[in-house]
Length: 282
Picture 1: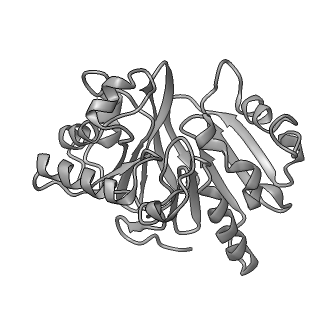
Picture 2: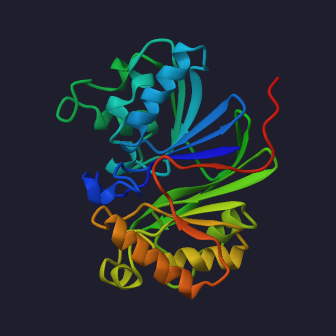
């Protein structure tokens, strides 16, 4: 199983030379195992991902994959109108996410592409074959992946966290979470003994208090989940768009001092991490 980061920022794009090492695109992560592919969130990172997938398809690569959205706030879907596979006939894309304000995924994404915001005038004008479904808590199979889906607190709403298993490895994806005092049992369940934990760390501990209710975690929150769940490796994610590369370096140095011996880094755009044994191709 391979995990690749195409976008690591939260809220809005961070352009410029001060954001090159950790990346400036909003969040999008790709998970592959053999010929199976999952895309987690459709921030602006999905735009270069889409170009890469189109290049692979031109050489005979698969045009079928699934997308799982942790939730549908703008930084998680703002790449969709520019995502090449959704705009070209011949692609088969399944998009799953939580119901929002009582609306299913078709209603949510259709409203984001309405004429006030997009020249696409709604999801019916996307050329790919799309399957849009709402997703509840549970354990599911998505192509070659086993996936645990759990609700996590995100300010006044909920976001979905995922645990993805394939090739004898486990990957926990917990973004846009705010715990208050203690991480909920669902967070620890997803991260239990995970080979890789990717965790929201948009705010410092001081910012979590000041921004209470906005739905984000601190590096200390991420470390606590990793430690209590026994995760083997921790990557901080959903970086503050104002946090420059040098500021990220300083934050990581401080966090590592609080958790000696723990494997901690910041998710970086373009990084590929291999987990478990290689998938067997049929």
